[in-house]
Image 1 (cartoon, rainbow, N blue to C red):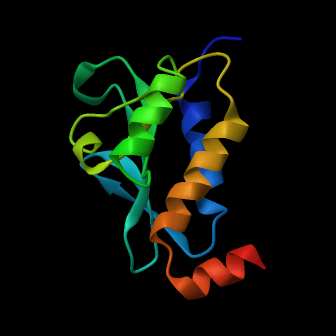
Image 2: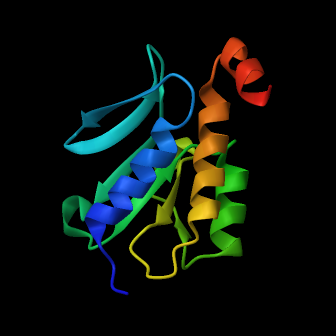
Length: 125
C-alpha cells in the first residue's frame, strides 16, 4: 500500500478531535489542533517549505525527552523547524508502516501537557 497524505491527515485529525474539548483551525496554512479556548497540542504539516515530509508535531515535556525520542527512533522522530527549540517533536506520517498507536499515544501525551486540570480529571475518569 502506498502512502496517501489525505488518509494520513484524516487519521491524525480523527485522533486529535477524539480528545475532549478539542478544535481545529489552520495555522500558517496547516491544520492545527488545540483545546477550545486554549493552546495548540498538535500540528500536521505536509511538505512544509518543500521539505518532502508529512508529519505530526506534538509537545514533549522538554528538550531532554525530545532528544531521547530522536535517539530512540531517528527514522520516525525528528526535531521540527520553528517548533523544535520549544521542545516539540515531529513524527513521520509519510511511511507505509506508520505505527498509528504510537502516533495516538504521543498526541494524547501532548494534549495532557496543556490540558487544564478539570479536563485531565475527566479524561482519566
